[in-house]
Length: 112
Image 1 (cartoon, rainbow, N blue to C red):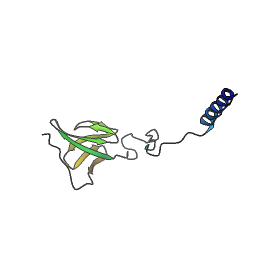
Image 2: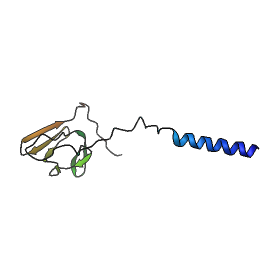
Image 3: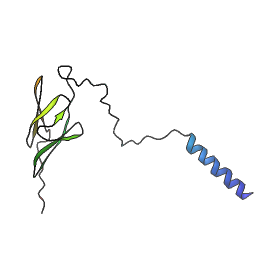
Image 4: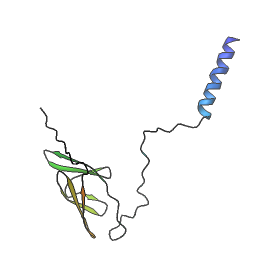
């Protein structure tokens, strides 16, 4: 009798786990889709977000829209023209765009 009760309890708890809606992770960033953006040169501007600038032995790299880029790389219709410690300059058929880091206190890391 005790075994049947345990089995029913196990079956019931499994049903609740399957039937309840899945909880969303509140720390997960929202899904981004670039499918509906028009990235062709000469059309509406492609939104570009500067996320970080890195300096290593090879020079500067910048993360734009989640992609790590160096000078000469392309992002949609834009070519990376220059990267410095606090700004990135992009060029396209429509002209130049300058993106700057908002943080005035730029931190450097020097290995010991």
